[in-house]
Length: 227
Image (tube, rainbow, N blue to C red; front, side, top):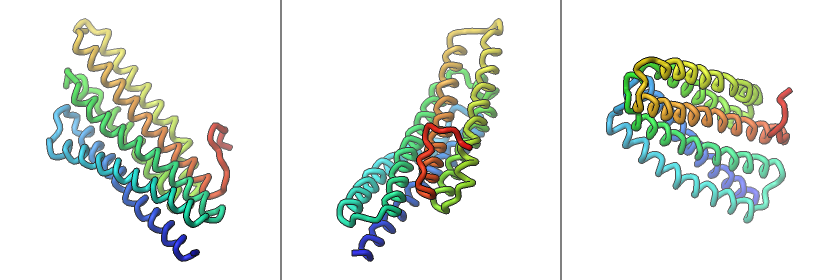
């Protein structure tokens, strides 16, 4: 029974690694697209993002079933359950990150004033880079039992918040110019929606980091101040 249980947990972690790497790959593609400052992306890259999103949805279902079956069939010990449940929490957050990647792509596709986007794209790109780095570090915290990476991720959430405010300040300044028009304002609305989505990616990274600490120490630090 112990061998079967260990094999089942190993299978979960193997699929989890594939799932996490695919999400990180999605973020890498999006980062490349946003850093170009263009609103029209190559069709092959956009297609890959959508196809990968479908793969993520299927992997999430597969992993959820494996986790439930492992707990039901093998009744793992407390430390194993903690690891598995932390993994499950992270999967949920990663799936949401995957959804947000597609949301950002769609926001860019609705921008009607490419010039405005180009002027603000550096801030947007920096936000995504920071958020993606947080996701990566939080995953390392879980897979390597590294609490320091988890704490770094949680503390850096405020950095992304500040970048969002910076983008909004630039947008407000632009919107008060004499050339203000409907399409310009619509672009600002879409830009705000896009950066808010990127900010939520950083929030999910924080959730992953909290789950990592739960896995490492058995402490649930959600809704608590980090000492």
